[in-house]
Length: 376
Image (cartoon, rainbow, N blue to C red; front, side):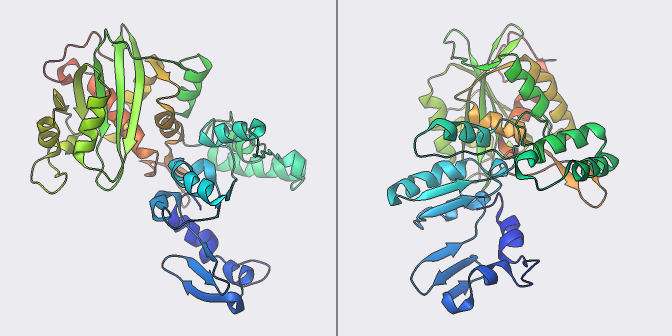
């Protein structure tokens, strides 16, 4: 399992081994031992009854129910962490195993897993830097650094070398929008225990998915601080599910911010707009924010984050999204594009963008809500 199915197809299923000169899967699994090969599902069934399959974490739901005995999570730092959470019960039931490999991308879900594996019985963790493996000489490494610096500058080159070759979890993530801000929040002790204060109202910020997950941030304002007390994300469920999630939390809601498309897109089988459907289920007062540029929203988040305190446990998934949210790298032009990469990190990051844009202007506060402080 690689981060994305299309990546898995290119890197494993159709890739040619440079030494053998044939497809990797044909080198590993000769036709003589196969019963069938399903190209669409990237699945091989062997004559002894076992199977082997290539998959992506962006479609891990397709593996649920297939009963895997072992899974290799390759490039796990870039994978959707839900892939492990939802597939682990199957491995536990089967008495199976899992291997997680990759290069650090900050202190994300891979770092947490690595640290757990160092002490948990039945796990094994190993970190090997370029010094340990001896794959490259210092002269080769310096040459690589210079080549990267010519494309991306000295700072970016240093970050990439520290991350890719020295496996440094604290190296800045290249192209990350908020990585440094989240790292600063962690260093300043603002990612900690942030309990819900029943004396203060709660405001939510949403990203509404069609097919993709829906994400919700929950915050309380205390003077100039913003306490981020909760985060929720799910997919493949109806609008009533999210209304029920809000109700079950028993928060006193001051208002809900919804993205601009909540007004003009249908949700479910009825013809109502999303905001009409949500309001009918008790999610109110709510406001649909006007359309604005992605850049404006990202800048609003950058202004907001230094004032945020995050609950470390309840916001873990959302924090991973913010850490990993990155620009697209244009390999042709050798620059980062001014466009975010759309992957599992997008939903939590887009929901935070909705929240930040709602808070920055008092006129955009949900009707009936009276915020103590607007983020400007």
